[in-house]
Amino acid sequence: MDNLTWTSISLTCVEYPQGDGIGYFLAYASLIPLAVLVSYVALVLNNRDLPTICLFTGQLINEGINIVAKRTLKHPRPENPHHLVGSANKYGMPSQHCQSMAFFTAYCFLYLMHQANHKTLFTRLTLTIILISNFLIILYSRVYLLYHYTSQCVVGAIIGSLFAYLWFRLTYDFLAHFFDKIVTWKISRFLGLTTWNMNLTPRTTKSSKKKTK
Image (cartoon, rainbow, N blue to C red; front, side):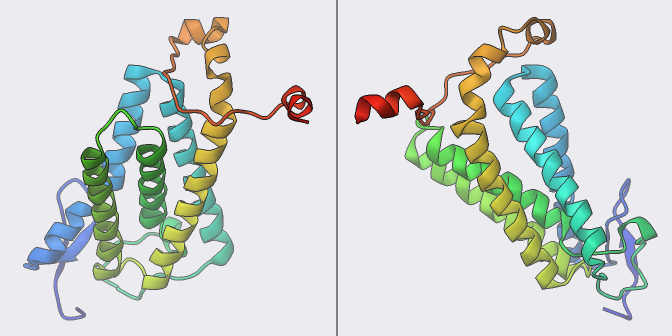
């Protein structure tokens, strides 16, 4: 791709080889994480429900982990003088796009499998296929467009998926048990916070342990 002319899609800095239809498509696909972020903000502002707020919080923490990892590992991106990569994001390990989408994909998958029993199995499987397909497109786009090495995308995917699992377990095995109480707080009523019915794992208390004995 060294002899190709690179151009960027309008209103973004995502570049692709000019005249390359696949690159053009993948450049737009690279904007999916941005669309996800905008959706987060819209849902939080519109619904103000604690489960969505927890998901958004986990996504932000995941982004923070990526920033720390990049500045710690300092692994360079693939050499491509055509890319407008500034000093602020010159490091590529792990891939922020892949880590972000891996978190979103894994968390939504866990939600569909454990919390979306009101939806049909066909619906859940269809949504899962869409989620995984979008993630794989993002991963491929980052390598194809020379923004990352494959290893950087794989590491980002692993970190994002593992953190999604941990955050999902923390949310629904622990935090969700306090949602009904939290929404009664004065500050919560002022902010209009809400919650909804969830399939929660029963919490084991000392009293329950004594009864079982």
